[in-house]
Length: 258
Image 1 (cartoon, rainbow, N blue to C red):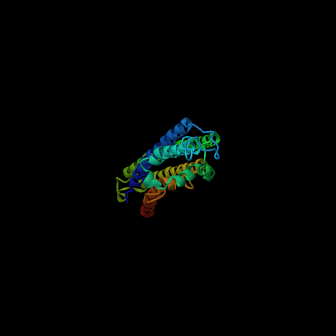
Image 2 (image 1 turned 60 degrees about the vertical axis):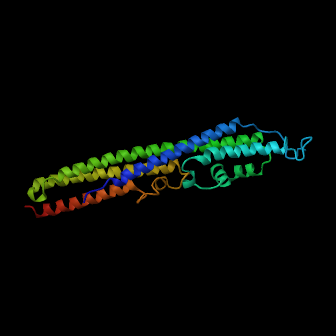
Image 3 (image 1 turned 60 degrees about the horizontal axis):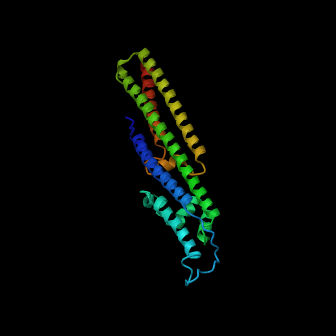
């Protein structure tokens, strides 16, 4: 049975889409961090008296403070919450997104603040920088995974090509020595396959070590929408089954050949 490489092609397409989303988010956090850095903290106290000549102090005090905080919220919505895939991927509101990205402590500090103090502005800027770094780190892993899948595809295609070459002469037309040589060739292909499986498993382990604090299982995260969660290993398993079938057939002919 022919082994399809469609799962690997689907995996590469999924990685291209994931990288595009990560880059969009990275640039959104970069823009938000710039806007936070450019924002002006206010020294107004929460209990500052209304400005003279106004009913509730809209030209100073809390009116000015509210505007600063609202401006920061609009900046977040205009950058982080405006990436093309936001509604499809997340779909949450500002409070939910802010807490998910920056943690409950930062979200609570922002929600309860009545002034955009310098410490609060620095805290939000640091949180934005951390999210920016996380996206950059994730992009690196996506690139490593894409390189791994491409390399695996080439290696598997080469292995299958060699198997096709070995299958050109019918087993019934081969003598004992030719069958024995074929068996040894198949054994070598099985060793190559085992090395590929080991390399792939090490790649998956590396991903998990690198991003264990961000997602529980990186490979499942990448391929959540595919028919299988481990497309490379599934393809390698299919190759293994094909080699096992071919080996059994050769063994049967060897046993029946004088």
